[in-house]
Length: 72
Image (cartoon, rainbow, N blue to C red):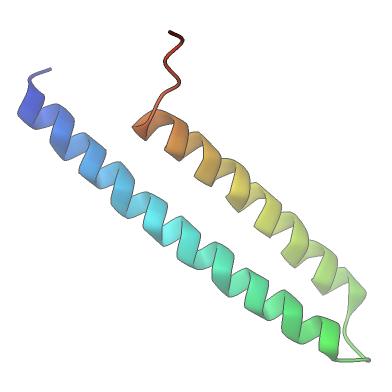
């Protein structure tokens, strides 16, 4: 793979990463709103929290692909 193709792939990963981060922020906002509602559905709240955790795992995985650990 040449440098140009590798750079294009990294740019695609960066865009995907930003989309996932935005989804994570949106879920955080939704969870916060549900917490403020005393009649909130606890099952929905649990599902949103689980989805947020899964997004966080995907974010970390993408970050690792973009900037891999280099053991010196």
